[in-house]
Image (cartoon, rainbow, N blue to C red; front, side):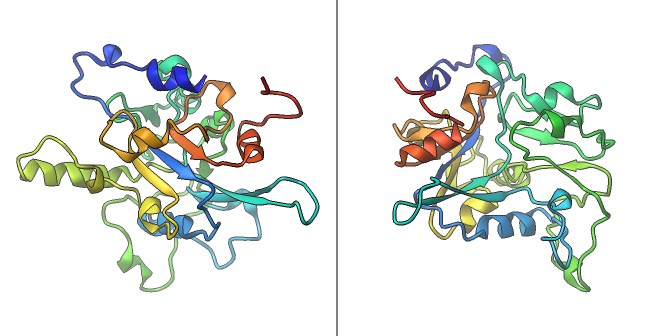
Length: 271
């Protein structure tokens, strides 16, 4: 199934739209230590508000990037754990037809799929908080903003001017730091270039990871690192059998981790 996703994609559907990209991630779970630096970097980069205690009510927590901890369920000394960072998966839909679950159900066109970048956007000024997209997303990556953003005194001076602050009552999610792509394009334009180099557009979580577990780039560009990493024999995608065709790949040499990510139970998936 993964082979079909990798090689069955062409630009025939996009003729007349100019060059297309397919930005995505490859996360090496064998390197991830669960430190949470990616979560902190995401919050700082994207102006995510927080409360004095974010642990009381998990239903109202506002994280675009969340790190999960799973185990193989075996007793010591055979017990093993694995940490799984989970940003928005930026699904492409079955057979590359862009039938992204969240985009398909939004009545306000507040979320959309970009044919040029492959990024699933979120337009806050269109969102009226029906939360259909949250119900449709199988990865639970979308969060509802339950309160108006507030920061400690003086901290509002450190907000990122490239990212709008969201009001109460809208749905938010990871955007692959799209504002950084816009900034890189502006720089390239000033320099008389059409191409944005790989190192010019990197997400905050990628740069913050101390273990180098997160790699970001154009999945269909042979010059980018993710192009080869996604074809690793140890690569997989979460809930891949749903046909959502996500752009976030995970790599682990541990068989139980790969089966857990695909939700394989018992003998399912063997053969």
